[in-house]
Image 1 (tube, rainbow over the protein chains, first blue to last red):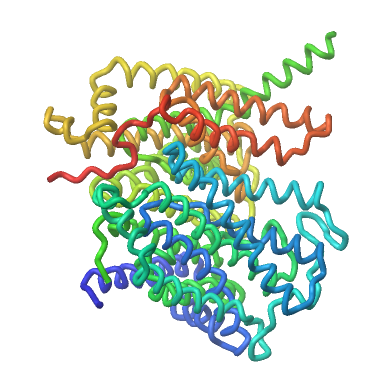
Image 2: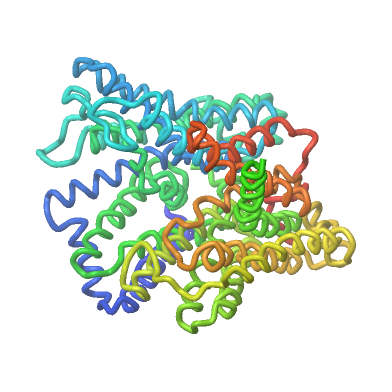
Length: 336
Length: 291
């Protein structure tokens, strides 16, 4: 399980986090010891901050699992951001439009999120399966279209009462995910962890999971073995988008209690880093999402308590992605 | 009649203004992709060019020095992508995505360090009207020059060979990794001028998010223009025209979000509809590893 390669990657990530972080803190005239202390204090200092860290972790875990599905099928889904926004929009609009009873409302919102995100993933999936169109460019374009389309809808034809600017109306109490331990943490956290285990099982123990991995690892051989690559591409992209879509729905139902076009500070992009650091393995992705959740929440503490601009965190995440892009993500992956 | 003519001329002039940064970015993308490297990092290169040109113009009081520094910064960022995608043979898509995130965050961090305020820089000496016209004309000159370089020069042939079949190119004595590296860096130099134009010609400052996805529209223009310099320039003009029309159409009641979505929708249609007729360089996006 612990290959030298995994250790080398962890060393690279740690060097980037502490090396780049220290240099950036020194540039901002802050001692790295104070800066990192503020970061960890911001992520773990109080019960509320620990909960906030786990909330961020949850918001990253859903799209990261989706990205892992697509990447393992050999498809570069760069569109998790747009899929997450569409999922959040569907959940927010539906929830504010039709007040439903609690036991019904929350599942409906999550399903709506999965469907909308799944649709947004299916579009490049169909384009790939039917026309051989490059999914990278298609998903990039659909990210921007998602923002523009939802902005248009919530400020135009689908505008709702109680909405100010680019958002839907507020969700009724019944449609809000219940909190855990009296903190900001909601059941979304539990759902995300369970989904990670389910996904691991699907990938490793089912025929579909085998076909998906075969399509990603050795497409030529998979084709000769009778696996329908087009079907795998379509299903993988749809599932991938659905995961991100549920993530968007949980942000709406559990955090913001309404949809806002600015609901994601780039979760869909940061999740690419999460998925790669987690080696595209759902269980390792849980660990990776916690690490990035710490960085995200700690970044706020670092800014307010130590005066280091929190953009440092995004800078580090970008560099981590570049550094780990060398992993052989697609071809001849290790068999777990 | 005169009013109509004036309105038409105004839209055409605005088309040039809106298209110029797209032309530069798209030309950089074409050069990079013809050598076999998909440049998802165009947005990051635009950001690097815009941010650096503003900082240096502000520090020296000389916008021309600022512009040169912006180009150098764009080349440097492109060189990072070029290095990791050629020498380390990493995945181009993933690396480019990381580059965009790092460039955006790096510039935002730099704003706080240098100007002690988040969001935007101070106003700095800009290139002025003459500079703007020079940059617009230079964009078209660059398109023609790149067309000639790619189709008529030995280096252009080598670049295209590396984009189609790097193994065959190496068998013919071409250093595919070196050729790809310099094509990406030269592409970065061209693309960064788009950032310089935005920051020092259209405006006189840098603000977070000012590139507003132009790097992605440029990727669309590359596809729409069938991976050729002149085609990509045409596509950039087409997208620039709709950006310019936005103001008039908005007054006529067309929602601006839908107009803004147009280049992206056009790219989706191009991807799906032209498939079979439009073909990317055969080895575009595939890292070359010597065996």
